[in-house]
Amino acid sequence: MDFSSNIARLRPSATIAVSTLAKKLKTEGRDIIDLSAGEPDFPTPDWIAQAGIRAIREGHTRYTPAPGLPELRSAVAASMMRSGGGKGWSVTSDGVVVTCGAKQALYNACMALFGPGDEVMIATPYWTSYPQIVSLARAEPVFVAGPEEGGFRLDPEILEAHRTPATRGLILCSPSNPTGAVYSAEELQAVARWCRDRGIHLLSDEIYRRIHFDEAGAPAPGLMDLDAEDVGSAVIIDGVSKAYAMTGWRIGYAVTSPEIAKKLGALQSHSTSNAATPSQMAALEALSRPDDADREIAAMVQAFRRRRDQVMAGIREALPGLEILEPGGAFYLFIRTDSRYGDGIDGSEAWCSDLLEEVGVAMVPGVAFGDDRFVRLSYATSDALLEEAVRRLARSRAGGG
Ligand code: PMP
Ligand code: GLU
Image 1 (cartoon, protein in one colour):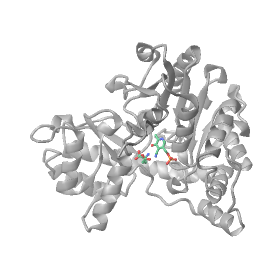
Image 2 (cartoon, rainbow, N blue to C red):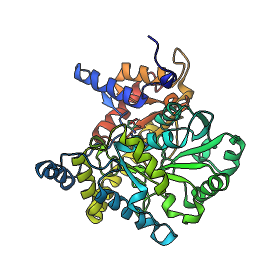
Image 3 (cartoon, protein in one colour):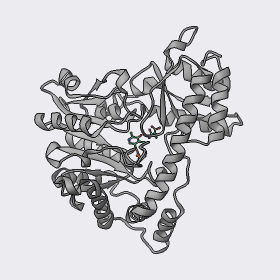
Image 4 (cartoon, rainbow, N blue to C red):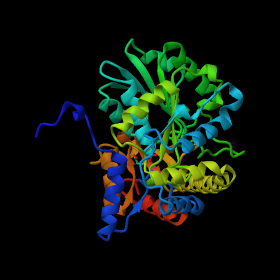
């Protein structure tokens, strides 16, 4: 069958594919530990969930304006201004578009800003959907990686080496999925200024900003922590999925100039209309009680941090020689496995399949993130399962056991 050229290069999401396979094997009775899923294992805090239930009961079951409930757009703007207030920013609700997950915020931004003939730089290793979404906009993804020992972080020199007259955008993710690398405010400032001075749109994916392993509990630096004058045309991508354990509610947002926001809203008015109304009401509750939310987030981050340390130590002991980049945020380990390739295992996909087949542990091949030398492990699961997963890894063929 001939499909349109819109989807000529489309590949289904590898992260979703692996977790779907893991779920299927589980329902078939296999004993599977799923370390592929990129979502918190915690339930949505009850007071947020109750707001969603209340919203349905109280009849908030109709369309909202396409860019979102005005109250929620204002609450997002206010939450942004908590960092940006003293830095010359003036984010208001007309610069906010509420979307069906952060994924749609990215999708809308790429569709609105990029098209045929445009090149969009993607910080590599990348979250698997970035190049797909750029390609759906018929623009060309350009993969740019910094040095491995620096967590692949980019700086102006590396960016400049990849710039062409067609460069229109840069997609950056900090804390990064899949590496967990975090840009300092100075590094972010250098990148932002580089984009600003060249008229390059900066898409800053800050969905893991609150999941930051900082002693003082501060969020990872984001664009709103920079002086507003350091930042040119930019779209901040964020949402409630990760920090508030609300992946299934499907609420994300784009924060940008009112001019761009208008286009994102117009685009959305012809695709999904608006994000689900009860979900928007629940997100409004989450953002309206920052002190309660901060307590919930701190508890989750503490658990993620403990698990990060536990799994890193476990893997280092059980599988000496496998290098792991120490993540500063998010909930993934990016593990370098290429020293174990060979003997029928010719890359990260084969490594992950072998592991799943032999010991029932699911991880995502690094090739899905643009680097076949690695695999991604999500430690957003219970301590007991993580311990058992490390034991299984130690005795697996793929792990060299
Ligand atoms: N960006 C990154 C880096 C992610 O890992 C995810 C997780 N799916 C998203 C965006 C999309 O988030 P959401 O579930 O809110 O669409
Ligand atoms: N962001 C998560 C992941 O990377 C969820 C799955 C997806 O949307 O890709 O696994």
